[in-house]
Image (cartoon, one colour):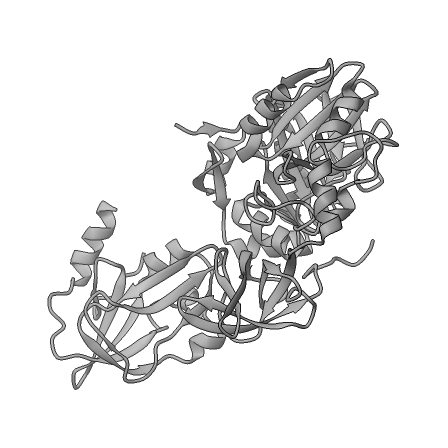
Length: 363
Length: 124
């Protein structure tokens, strides 16, 4: 019914509460979401993110093809660098948000959201304007994320080769098992951390090594904490802050949309028009003033006028207050605007604040 | 899993304590708090609010979800446990001490004994 990652037995042994997510059986938590969330903020958390998809693009025209399907400008990327970008439809709505890894001038790996893998792969095949090969490696590759202020210390006990700059990666043969491993300095938590890619069996060995070397300082974390962490860090989740109905400009991702990159890209015209006309709505960060929790879908009002809705919300574990990301009609997205969130027919006062909610101290 | 014998229970994992004088305290069981996970917010009703059996008396929010605590019988709110406003996690740490509401009721109907509730849990 549901796929299992190579780490399934480990999750069960660790007491993971398994749930269905993007066609996989994954742990939503092992102990408590609050504990796991705090572990990432204060020590080190380890996540099984093997459900994510990996599509390898090869060919002389790999660069041209990727420039065509993503909104960000990937020129100037060096081998060993990674870049985040939305990928859009003709009308400017989002297909997905992805991370592009440059292996070589003619070889890139696209890491895509698990829930969008099949759609993304079809999209790539449909839009193969250039002569390239696209291979879906997702079933063969697994991924672990290790995140938190102690992540560097712990991962260094297992790997000698590590990426230094944020959004750079190393690609090497791991002597312990003579197999290729890719480690990037990336993450979805707002903390310092790494994401490790390797063949399924290799990831299993790496997980075990990290758990041993990490001892009491490494805590397994599930999907629950993954969501609360990324929300605090103001990071978008497809289907919430971005979707086929929300453009990256509306989602506040304009710095990843290169309208002036020379080549054409899917959605360029629509996004250029949208920018010229001016956005009618914009993602913003809100915090509740009264008690309560604003969740996805809650409608937002100013007096009786509906001005938007919540795209993601929770009680922030690190900050101790209720926070939410919302899509709000301009000009009500302005910082300081007072508004009301309707939660089960109760009007809760809230205000627009500057995001992100949480930002770690610069290392 | 603890199931105190001096309390009565419902199929929806609530416990009921007879305080005398047609007054009852209602909370959720150890099993329920464990299933919910970390409770971060409790939306309490107001004094004198009236509820029919199976109406939503309280909404309990955990990090990931919202759960409803249903009225086990027709009742009127006498008192709410205000300490849960600032410390909702008390329900997690002491489910049988952290009563949520105190109500007045004329007819509490058929509730489960501790043994019957234990049997229910075993079959879940």
